Image 1 (cartoon, rainbow, N blue to C red):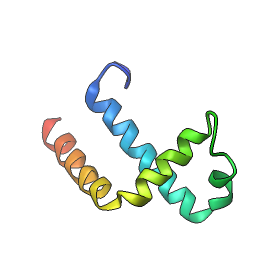
Image 2: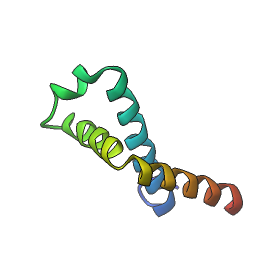
Image 3: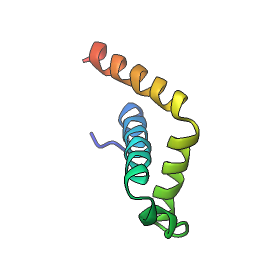
Image 4: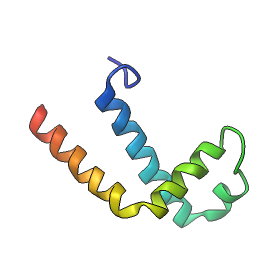
Length: 72
């Protein structure tokens, strides 16, 4: 089953993209700052969410990890 049809997998993909974009924006901010619109703007928005809501994102990472660990 693909990640688009399984809700837990879709949430995992979204959470991992937020974490990855926030980390990459910390390393190389110029890549994300010049692409704020269009398709690449989605990654800029993910980086903003990861930076501004980092305590909540990290809590969701822990919850998702325990859910995956105990469900499978």
